[in-house]
Length: 85
Image 1 (tube, rainbow, N blue to C red):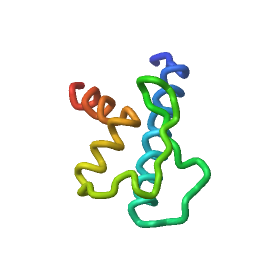
Image 2: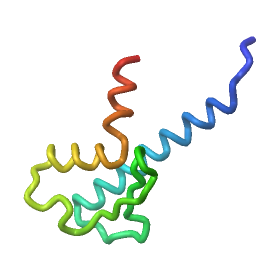
Image 3: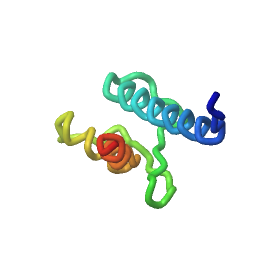
């Protein structure tokens, strides 16, 4: 029976949770659901929070807005990493 690497399992679960929370927050904003106090994204590069304002994606189509959001949140790099596996 193989030994379970609980540290790696925990890290993967945390990463998946962060990704799910970003997708949920993005969908809520796109649907106009009431804003939550935690509507900030921590960028992967700097770790600094980026505040999502009501007009952050104004003038962008859904693809452009999604790309901008993923770039800020590091999700684009994560998606590329997963597709290379």
